[in-house]
Length: 137
Image 1 (tube, one colour):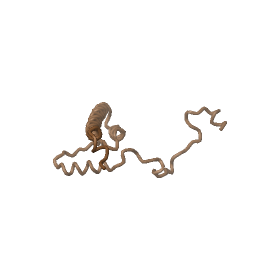
Image 2 (image 1 turned 90 degrees about the horizontal axis):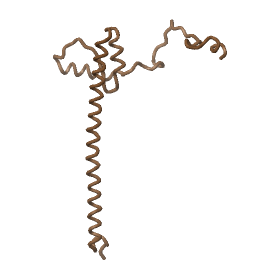
Image 3 (image 1 turned 180 degrees about the horizontal axis):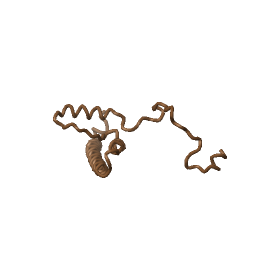
Image 4 (image 1 turned 60 degrees about the horizontal axis):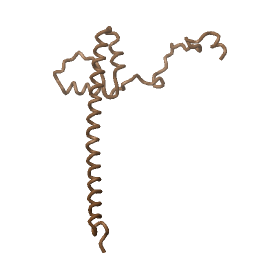
């Protein structure tokens, strides 16, 4: 006894259509993912270029004493900025320096990770509070 799908022409036609639908869905998924990844790469590229242009403009307008703070604030987990005086004659050495910069944390350490300072003074009153509200608590 043959199955309904192979016995009748309508069953065979339904099987071919379901198979074509499944193949088209898989094909569409891969095309969609490729387009999505391309768009994401383009957005990342544009963000990198915009961030770099902003950092360069800002560094050019302020004094050298603020450069390290500006570069530290502009760093992200995937983009690091730094100044170097060495020329890029040896690409391997420059690549190693970049790798070492990427291994450094992008932000300052958490307050709990910092060593306590003996000469630090802690006031109980917040500088923005008025004296009458500080004494009531």
